[in-house]
Amino acid sequence: MATPDARWLGNLLLVSLAACPAPAGDDGRSPTTGGVSTTPATTSTTTTTGSEPEPTTASPTTSTTSTSTTTTLTTTSTTSTGDTTGPGDGLVALHIDPPQLHVLVTSGWSFPAQFTVTGEDGDGMAIAVEAEWSLDDPALGTITRHGGSFQASNSAAGVATITASAADLQASVEVTIEIVDDHPVCPPRPPLVAGEPGPGAFVKIVAPEYEGTGVYHGLYLPPDWQPGRRYPMIVESPCNKYGDFTGKVDDATLGYNLAGCRHYVWLVLPYLENGANLDYGWGDVPATIAYWQTNLARTIETWGVDPGAVVVSGFSRGAIGASFVGLHDDAIADAWLGFFMHSHADVITNLTPDQGAGSATRMGRVGGRAALLSWGAAGDGGAANSLKGVELLTSFGHPPTTLAVPGVGHTDAWLQDDAASRQVAQQWLFSTVAARPGTHAIRGRVVDGDGHGVADAQIAAGAHVTRTDAHGYYALLGLVPGVREVACTHAVLTCSNSQMVDVTATDAQDVEFVASE
Image (cartoon, rainbow, N blue to C red; front, side, top):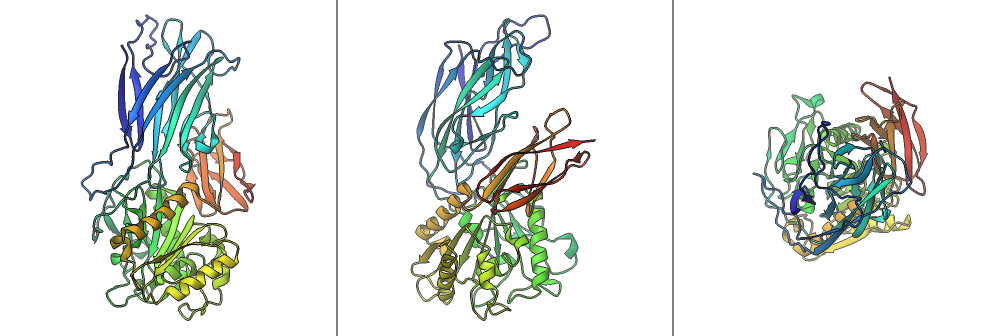
């Protein structure tokens, strides 16, 4: 008799049924086990309860308050479709693994799940097939047509049906998407240390161009970080040195506490002057911009960051710097999905080298992307500029989210101390990363001359760079609307020419490249 077997993969609950195999024949093929069958009148129901436990690591753990639900998942079966893909001859059923899937969206994020399908012949033997995959509700996610890789949209909950078609047969599974409404809390931030980055550590990084100088930045990988996965990221720059604030990378905390130490990579970038980090003022602005761009790209490539899920943030000088540096020109402005500016903003003021003369142009580059402007409600010296920033962004037709933090002045300590205000800021972050408002996407595939997917091709559009998966598929998300040049490169093969893709009004699908020797 079949027995359920449940296991967690990241934040995916996989439930499979182990079945007794049919007797093996003497033709060297293996019997089928588990999976969802197309055999008529075969229906199974499995109930899964609860939410995923956080991974156990040696790093500081994250505490959360969460809700869980009980969901009934039902697999369905169908028969012949007249659709012909795969080997075809002799198949009587298809089996999908996993047969059911429960995706938990936490902190606005989830990880992709891989489906596979095998065929079964009349003798009960497993036969490899190539299937075409489809999803009945695109609001809940996407699945690659020839790859079977499912990614939840992260912004909608519900139940969707995924179907695999091959050799005149179909098999279907149900996927339940649950959005968990919780607000993780970080333990005290670990100190900045030398060494290799790892989950739960805040590590000092010296870029190769700056070895032997006083220039460095900080990198924190969340406790649940694993190689081979993609994560969102918060970029922060330090405030000025004043009072108890040192203005150093070492002592930044805003992005760390905002993320709640789950899923989010945290990158702290400095301001530069004369071969050293600068704890007050703006220093060498062109060198700072170049440093940010170079090390942002390196971090994305090296540490598994989704280039379409990067939020720039800062307090005081860092709030102004999110625009003064982060929106300095179109090239660097292209990097961000959202903007969090606490206590100050880039407006007409004597706090920037140009006295704010270019602030309207810079802040205008926010466009329709998400922005959160906040300030202390009790004597914050940066509040007036924050309110001017709200007025400026609103004048462009895109009013930002605002937060007046009660009972505090000019500080970002509230993100650790004030749970209610932190939750408001987290809700903005999580919804921004989930829905990616004000941006569009380009999806496609790289194939060889025979139409087979090409893995590990690099796809670039401005500051957004990604790689194709094992089946040749890619997705560039969080793109500023407009006409984008998309280019393909590969370490061994030669890609077809770059393409101009219009994502002014909507996403672009099926943008294909051919890679050949």
